[in-house]
Image (cartoon, rainbow, N blue to C red):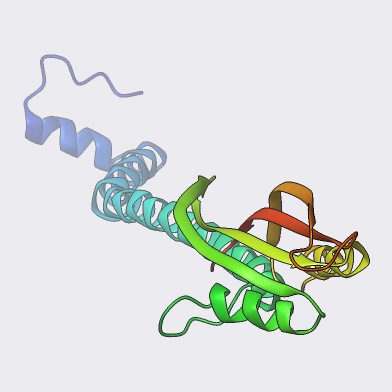
Length: 181
C-alpha cells in the first residue's frame, strides 16, 4: 500500500496513478460504495415495503379462503333453515305439519326467542290433541323435519273425553325451538 501520510492530496494521487493495481482496488472500492449507496439502499426500502404488502395480501388471502370455507358450510345447511319471507315462517310450517295428521291443533303460541350461541331461536308452545299413536307420529315428523328444530320439552296428559263415557283423549304440550338463518 502507498504511504500517503505527510503528502499533499495531489502528491498522493500522483503516487496512486503510478501503481495501477492499487488504483484499480481504490476505484473498485469507490464504485462499490457508490453502487451500494445509489442503487441498493433504495432497493432495500422498496424490498421492505414489498414484503410488508406481501404479508398484508397473504393475510387477506387467508381471510378470503376462510370466508369461502364458511360460506360452503353455510350453504350445506341452507336447506334446513326456513326461507326468509314476510312474517313468521315457523307458524305456517307447524300448522301445515299438524294438518298432515288426524290431530287437533289446540294452541300455537310464540314465546320470546332464545339465544343459542350466535343465533336467535324462535320458541313456540304447541298443544295438540288426538290419539297417542298420531301424537307420536306428529312428534316423529317434527324430529325428522327438514328444518333445524329442537323439541325442548314434552308433556303428555290423558284426559277423559267430554260427552263420551269411558273414552279418553291425549293432549301433548311441546316447547319447540327453530333455528333461523
